[in-house]
Image (cartoon, rainbow, N blue to C red; front, side, top):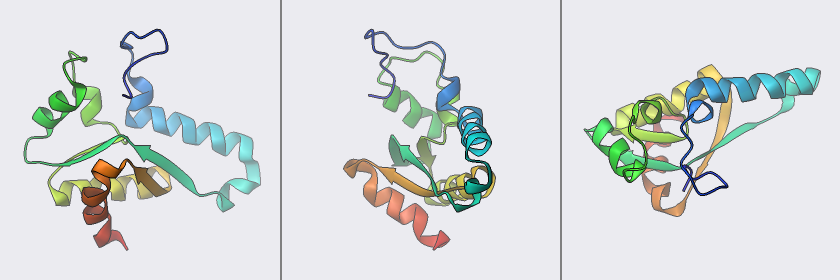
Length: 121
């Protein structure tokens, strides 16, 4: 999964998995792309999309017990958890705040991602 480091251990620092980690990466691309940045399409690979009324419970399930504090997962642009309206809101923030206009995921999450994205088309 997305939590296992190369050495097989779970990383204790999930900063890159949170929204501020994505912002850092977008800023890096912006600095290096220069004037080309406006022509780039930014994309993310979402690790999971779960329609739920219990975001924290879904984050605990997703972490498979490997993470003690699931707080960073709730702030992650790479994990969409919540009601359909909340998922749509998360996608809208990705677009409006980070400039991400292309989102992919794994097959198991493709249907809930499509439902969440439909109102944004």
